[in-house]
Length: 419
Ligand code: PMP
Image (cartoon, rainbow, N blue to C red; front, side, top):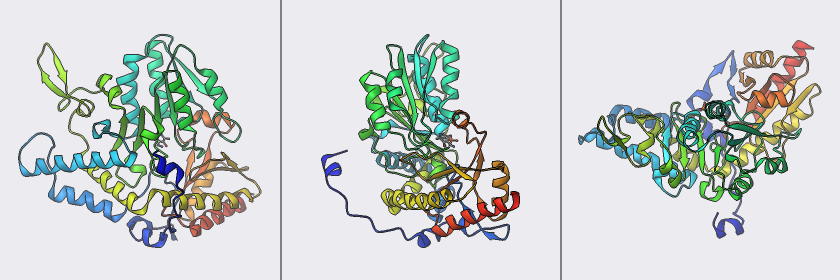
């Protein structure tokens, strides 16, 4: 963060014109079970505005060809647009260089890339990897696979009853065998915003690199990887108004250069003989084969859209939605909120006494309300709270206070049916 950003308080941004924004999203006009759709499952995947859909169509109808390969008009256009998209991502997370941005299929692939490219090269027997109780399975399972292969160990940062990481316990986990830290920026199951800047500084004090799973942060707040000083930052396009099949791995250039490639194939080489292959420089080294060209370019359009709305205004509106929903649900007898951290993003996980979350989800769907129920690919968090599953409403900037009211009314209905 530069001096100006840290000392000058910005003027408050004007509130969002949510109705105008909603008009951009064709899918939000749907009716489900004779009710207006109330889509509050944005942590799983968000919706696309027309401007982003149009970018996809434009690519398919007037720009499509394979990239980096031919000198004809379409290939050159597609290549240029793909690289423009990379620079949009670079600016979005404030990376120093565009070659630090690797396109992947999503957060999951980005983390697997780091596990294979960094972990398999630099982590060995009896080495230790620190993860947290909050992690999504995609930031647990790859490291378990590595630990099993190498004989390494996983150490886990515990959480308190509010769902906040215990930073003193985190500090105590470091020792001379610690080689890597993986931590999510925002919890998809509870909404906790983790103090990753502080956690990264602690890890760096021990010379240990940090991967941040930003899948639930990138859509909701401005990200500055240089300010955070993270070594890797991963996120998915489909959670930030972009298409499925595209994600991003940011990595510091010097680390990416020292890593081994994760997939071999075309486009990631300088030269190939049967005796020896030399690899292309980053980012190509990590983008073997034909990448998701259309999806990357469309993600660029999604970033344009989010920037036009304004990440600070998005964060402010989502905080209002969360506060309003939390206040109402908190006052409902027989409903318990899981995850009450002081710093939270727009995720409201709850359990309704005596009703299985799947039944909550099914009944809410009858009212046109789309939530997610289950363990949210975060079974260790559920175990920590002694529950098998929760119901989770997760908000986006296009949600309204009236939709929160509809959600709350629908939860009341569930209680009427079951109790
Ligand atoms: N991490 C977190 C915190 C997530 O919420 C998700 C998606 N639920 C993922 C990783 C995985 O993202 P993807 O499925 O797009 O790879």
